[in-house]
Length: 122
Image (cartoon, rainbow, N blue to C red):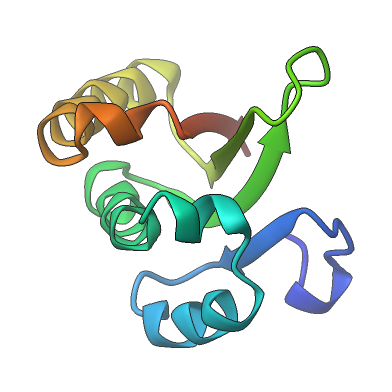
């Protein structure tokens, strides 16, 4: 696992290895938050999704939140939660199913397209 000081990707909005660090994260986001978050009122949903990742996925080591874009579609930025975790593929898929039940219920449909998720199995 990389130490916080080793992360150099400028597109990373935050990096966390604990669930209960939102206060520090939100302070950083408040000062460096990309326009996509402000213009679309995404901060409350970022927190919900972040917390739910730690509640539903077993074996999460850390989460990186990145701003990504499709080079073929101008101005189509998304917030990517890159989930670094340990586990068997079957368990990860079961956790993913449980996570998406929450995501589809709690995040309004008009906000869902702003989020994407990737996994790194350690």
